[in-house]
Length: 239
View 1: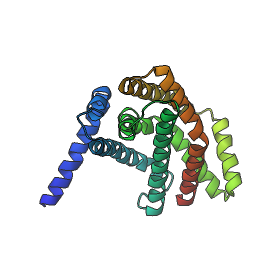
View 2: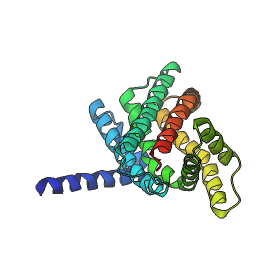
View 3: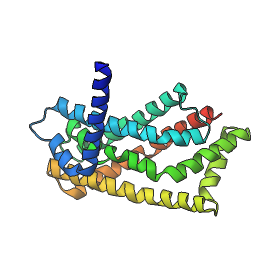
View 4: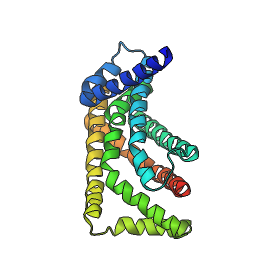
């Protein structure tokens, strides 16, 4: 019983810590990357914040998967989902860190990871909520393709056609609006990331922005490939 109470307390503390980060991202970022904090503690807190946000994001997605007849107890799908998202995260962090180094910015991996976790990673649950309508549309299209027994290329063509030519129902319009807002939200998060990196390493914002822009361009196709693998995992998991 005591262990259960400790687990619940730890989970509650993690959620409150995440919410505090969400409410005061700049203050949290300054605290995490403070020179008084060791590199190990920076990584530990960054992973704790991002892990909490990631867990909340996964929980928020469960109703979507159930809506498309994906069993939430399907461990093969859940494991694929977690692994692919982690790969995207590791790829993004690595390329941003190396991109800063290429631009002669003295990036320290623990600090860069911490800034990214606070300024971008903590907001992933809000991005998941914003993507609800478009993700439902995507899952329904994948589900329809599977029920029609379309092959891989047929499924890709069907999904791309659905994305390119949205319907005229209120829900389709809502999905289009949410998809249109996503680039704007992503721009705000990247702008906040650039601002904090610039302030922390005391370099020009335009130099940091150029570095991050180059990094985003480099990871575009690998991220698209990993996202396609995630859609394939959805296709396999749909019953």
